[in-house]
Amino acid sequence: MKLLSNIILTLGLIIANNEEPKFLKNMTVSAVQPDAIEIKWQDIGASSYRIFRSEKIHSDFEMIAEVKETSYKDTAPRGIKFWYKIEPLWGNEPENTNVEYITEEEYISKQESQCNETANQQSEAGENKKCIVYCGFLIPDKPKSYKVDEITKQKNKNLPKLSREEKLLWDKRDSYLKKYYMNAVKLSLVLTMGKPYVDKGDVLIFSDEYRYELFPEEDIIVFYDKDLTYKVIFNSSKIFEILRESNDSGLEEILLKNPELFCVPSGIDEVIDENGSTKILNVYNAVGFSTRLFKEDKEWKFRTILLATSRKDLKDQLMNATKSKNQEE
Image (cartoon, rainbow, N blue to C red; front, top):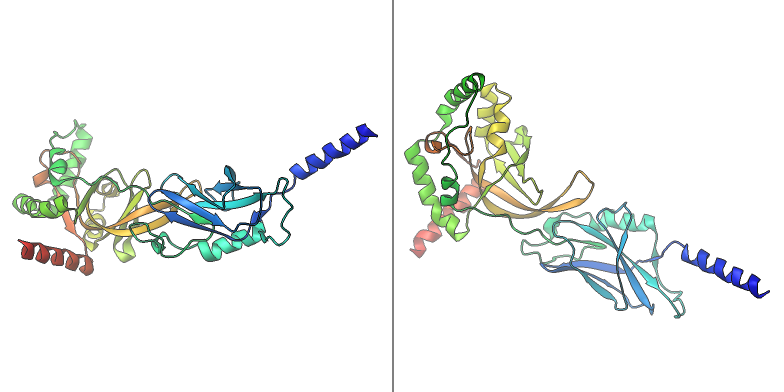
């Protein structure tokens, strides 16, 4: 009889341990920028609580902590939106029958209706303007911004050795682009005048190996850095004209893969990466764009295309900054 009782008890424990976990319905998540994502829930008298986290709402959730308190701060990796679930553990405590649990369908439904908001609900500083239900994120670090001198000093190399065919193609492209190259004196003047704004941080210069998307109907190019931590939006009808009239399919990647982008901040946004995770990106608008056939060309002053944005509001923003600077001086 004792053996039978032990078998029944063991089976009961196995069945209990294999029960599907129940997750709390009343939970909020908010990002305490820049340090942690804070999860809070109502005290329902449980012995402890397990916190589960996932990069994808439809994916398996991984347990990241077990606590006795009714809040938890998760120092999660930056730049990724995470979803959370809370499972109460009762231990020796009697289970509270008034607890509201959430089904998988309800959880996903709530996320799609309440959490599927762009990251711009948060200020650039990262302070929540509205609590995001069940999901949260930490804004990625700002990308490196170069000084004008740092950019120009990089361009001190001779052209790479080219085969005869490559040299002919280079000459052809160089000949076509000559009408778009900025005058060397004017280019130096523009960079000199822009230095104070870059030094002060009003304008940021980014230089990276970019992936990009073209939106010709809107005259927009969106650049993404290789680590997918920020994106830059550039409005220009001129660059599309240059590419279109060249009749050279290879010129696009050469001019757009390694430009210098002169930018102003424009909040944050989110994008789904190739793994299905939601990445949080710093967003910038480019007020200027420079490029050439070879990124590091010691003759860059004579072979650089420098274009300004087509957006009037950004031009006005720079003009106002210039007026303010002149008044301060």
